[in-house]
Amino acid sequence: MMAWSVIVSAIWVFAATTTALLPMRRQYVPGVTLLVLAPVLIVWLGYDFGWGWSVAAFLAFASMFRNPLKYFYARARGQRPEIPK
Image 1 (cartoon, one colour):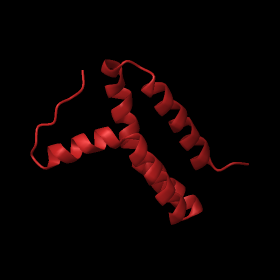
Image 2 (cartoon, rainbow, N blue to C red):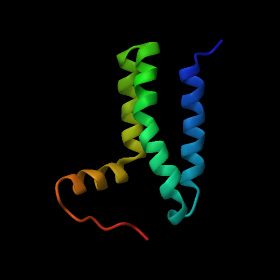
Image 3 (cartoon, rainbow, N blue to C red):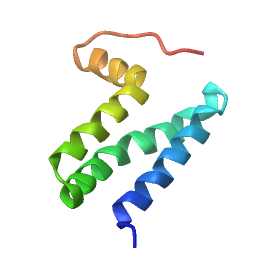
């Protein structure tokens, strides 16, 4: 049987793909939810399979969410980045 962390992570990937297909104004709520859940899943995968898989999952996460991560990084530095319409 497959580990629950893999099953939940696969569901997360399908949810992220579905969210990406939505119009931009409808992406915010599910996108932020996925953004918050991602670190939990990455740690869970690392707990089940080792830190190497956590690194791989983090790199995939950073690739998928590079624009929101850039936005939050700029906000943390005190800048006012523009939000796409």
